[in-house]
Amino acid sequence: MKEKEIATLLNKALELEHQAYVQYLSHAQLIDGINAEPIIARLKELAEDERKHQEQFRNLIGNYLDEVPSMGIAKHTRQKLLKKFCRSTLKMKKKQ
Image 1: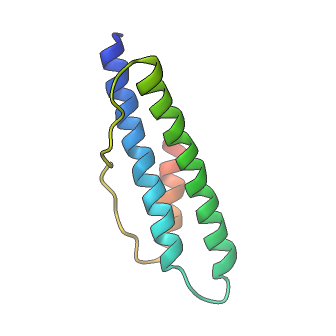
Image 2 (image 1 turned 180 degrees about the horizontal axis):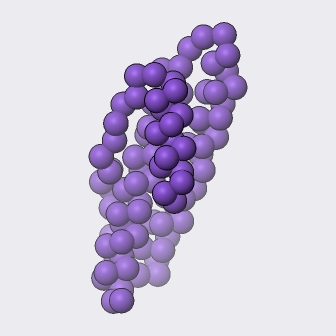
């Protein structure tokens, strides 16, 4: 596999990380109720993990492959219900 192809794949992965980061933070903002605080804290923790992954991908793409890291974002979906969101998150995590 050529470096350009590797950079393309890493940029797609970076865009997925961008999407996950935004989704976790956005959903943390939407959650409310008596048990919301631990869920919000966990979502923010997951967002921070995604931010760190973004940093790693940008480093690989920019510093090691001498390519331009993507500023794009993968397609995302807004979940209206917490259960749907949790299922969606678990499904996404299993794919990783």
